[in-house]
Image (cartoon, rainbow, N blue to C red; front, side, top):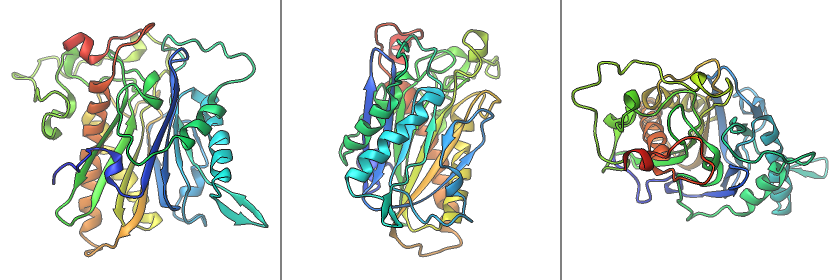
Length: 335
């Protein structure tokens, strides 16, 4: 296994990514838009999720594919990003025809980034509808930015700024697996407050500093460092999408989303808490049929977990400092 040429979600051909953000607000939206409707599912394991239209992604539901996935800041206010996304997608001619009407499908998940130091005094008109539309319209197949961009602008962890991360893996079978993630966890991505990432064992080519695991391991590595010591409970959630060009059914995509959650547990400590809304979407473009339907889904699931692990660390590593931040960026604290 090796990273793709871009080491980004966009190594899965047929996907575009768009970002919209407001630095004063310290919040934003990231949209993932497949060139054609794509098979998708979702798994939620956090105790405080915020989602829209995720029920339709269950394998037993009739909807065969989606037009976009939205990852938004703003807590519950951010769910309005889907309204803007649907308008933009409809203008593009996207969506399922129902009774003479075209209805795009854009399942959405949000993070709580209200308490990150940004100006949230928006009055009666939260900005997320506009940000959702702008993110969809900005979607490109060559925008590989990570860190403090789109959803990543407002993300934080327990002790460092969070960010938007992405990574990819090309398997021996030829299938590509990739992830994109907004890291806004209740816990921490680094060991015992130091520079070493929990994800170090999965790092490829020094992609988040090349420090490896701390040696010797800190005696207090299991010490909990969480937002609950300072910020308001609920100021959390890590949300992600994993994608592959392997042709998967909705049921197989569901299993892929479940398997990818292992990436949260490998990169964050603690993960899946009652105050996190940990959510992973899984998406299949269907470009490459499975040659071995028994083994390859296992390999793809394992790669998704490892790739998401790396993407989480990359998001924190790539975050940059900005005026009004309440937490330092990794690069500020550790250089």
